[in-house]
Figure (cartoon, rainbow, N blue to C red):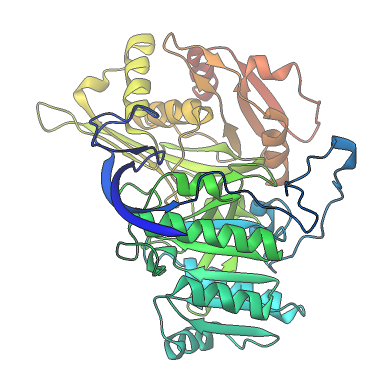
Amino acid sequence: MAKSKATAFFCKECGYESAKWNGQCPSCKAWNTFVEAPVIKEEKAAGRISLDGAGRVKFAAPKKLEEIDASAEERIPTGFSELDNVLGGGIVPASLVLVGGDPGIGKSTLLLQACANIAASGRKVLYVSGEESLKQIKLRADRIGKIGGDMLFLSENNLDMIAAALQNEMPALAVIDSIQTVYRDEVSGAPGSISQVRESTSVLLQVAKGLGIAVFIVGHVTKDGQVAGPRMLEHMVDAVLYFEGDKSTAYRIVRSVKNRFGRTDEIGVFEMREEGLREVANPSEYMLSGGADDATGSVVTCSLEGSRPMLLEIQALVCRSGFGQPRRTASGADYNRVNLLIAVLEKRENFKLSECDAYVNIAGGMKISEPSLDLGIVMALASSYLDLHIDSKTLIFGEVGLSGEVRPVRMAQQRVAEAVKMGFETVILPEANLKGLDKNPEIRLVGVSNIAQAMRYIQK
């Protein structure tokens, strides 16, 4: 079978292939995403088909739905309940999972700890590193504690050698760190190029499905926070996890943005320590710890990450501006959304915020874009502007519209249940959400239909 080398243009967003460069991708309509990369085309003989010993044509036999075995396979626990929750209950055998995150955020540490837990449970694990030598891996492993069980390490970049090791060892789990360092001799281009990443992922996908091995691949991210390489990489894998967090804070979050075996947008919270990562079983308690009880501009709200409610503290500071143009700063919240809510307060409640600087911060370094935080942000700004204290045992959530109305949010029952668990006494929420809530004598529910009603409550 002859092979000819050529170049083509690929869209970094969707993987669309073109013989020439295009300003706009015809497939995903993205602009300036085409890059040139070498490709290998196999020249097959015309009319060649596969025959069995009896001279009949070989083909894959389709099956009826009732003939397909849909029995659930036993998932592999990682030893971290937070990570198992993000994966949908554990690692699915024969799956391919992509893990992305900023450099130094803790991706390799998390996977190494999970591998150690799985090896300690009696399963074979193979950890392949294309970035570190075996000595460097050992130094990092010694830092997180003793690793026992049937765990093997390999320092290799050649994809064919990695595939041979997987076939020879047949581990239950394999980790490839990272996909941008792996290459194949038959493919032109340096490791990390679009053609190499695409081919390497395709081969690993075939190995995972063919041998029944769960494979985790680590991916580098760009400055925009996306996994480097072709966007089709995320379409090829079964699950995509992002490891997020600020290096200046101790917490880390694992977030699923794609999962064929569970819910998306689930999160797991971890704390980075000197000996490695430790899971945080109660994120609400962790995020609220250290808050001031009598400070103005402080409001506790509830965000929903996947199916998990999480309590957060919103801090706002409104002060007289010393310049002609007032400053607006949003840390952890959407900047444009904060500006919109400030405009609503000016128009509907006659606040003179155009003369003031306004700063909004979500304590703990969390980045949340859910609209249910709107009412909490509005009340925090009002509390700071009016210099009014809001009871620390009051939880506030709801979406705010441009006319100042408070709109309902999803899964209000779960948010109220989280407030009860954390010892809150009052919840201010959209009035439309009150109809479907179960009555609970342990907490007072206050329904509001607009921000004026919420303002009157905090001014009592």
